[in-house]
Image 1 (tube, rainbow, N blue to C red):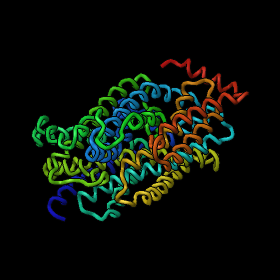
Image 2 (spheres, rainbow, N blue to C red; image 1 turned 90 degrees about the vertical axis):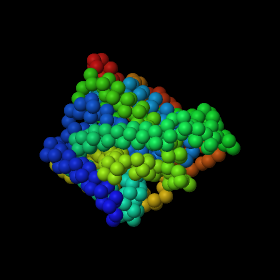
Image 3 (cartoon, one colour; image 1 turned 180 degrees about the horizontal axis):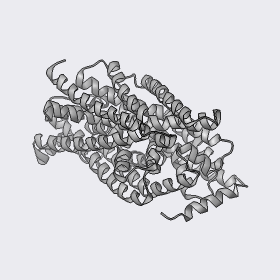
Image 4 (cartoon, helix red, strand yellow; image 1 turned 120 degrees about the vertical axis):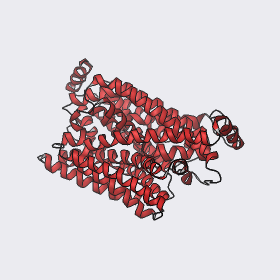
Length: 498
């Protein structure tokens, strides 16, 4: 290793040591499954907001989005960011309070499958089983994207073999997730969200200044075509139009079905603090995404003569920009923001997926008398198992983080989004409707992804969400004798004051 790599490694070691120490500290505070999966519903507004946004954005924000902006210009990246901003706001506004209130009312549910089972009075446990399988399936794919981002980081910075870099990133994420559970995840996400925010803002604006200032930089960018910096102009020779913009905006629909974000709403200390969290979250995500787009497009000028020839390679634009701007140790510490982004999402996904199996399959179906201690052990074993599978999915170093995330995002949005919204807002929603919605939404995403051309170029989340919503309504209305107690419980939940 050269001197640059040694100093950078020191910054990484300090940062990773801090993350693991948080895991050790919170390990002592984790005494029950409620603590491990929801932090005892005691999380304050700042930690809730930054944890939700950090776990939401992942390595996609620091690598996938800047890479897309660098390689293709602002059009797709801009409209995707707009869709996500709108989705973030609506999720906090419409779902957050109701989710917390109803999960407590529905027998103090602490996982999404458990909530849906209690909400729809599903004695057969079919709903719990299907939702757990969906969570495991798509979270394995999503977790792989986090591993992919951390591996690309270690490879770019230290010149490590990709597979060694992959295992190194996995080891740290696995370490503190196993130890501290939700409390460790939220505490580390708060620090990671702060670091991601500072690194993005600082890199974007300093790169813009060093590139010659706004006027000069945008004049230089104009040589790539007006479409490169104007999302309202279609690139020459392409057919980017209404359907493509609609596809990008459809990313916002995914929020209603993201289990690792929904559990943040469930764990907040009180409904009265949701409004504060929403404001914090919106400021964070608005500025962070604007900075990510800035890093991507400015990198086209700032990093010359370095040129990335593919979107996958362009996902290193944030790394190269920081290395060029900051002194070695500071750059190394800021580079931890990329690892932070990957870790903050992967740890949340591992935790939600492990809870889906240990509590909603193992304890609910296989060993109903399992103790809290046994359930926690099974959960930690599940974390390790999911990690191993995700490692195999992340083995291809040429995979695009953006593409991997988009597939998992569509899967969750289409399967859970319509069901969560119906469960919180529609009195007549039923168990059969929920099952039909999840199955039809998931199948639509999988099948649509394999097709191409014309209408099939629309992002698979949109048709999946629409079809699942239709099935939710039809199968709920076809259920002639719904449980009257379910209606009574819904009315009681609606009567609870915020």
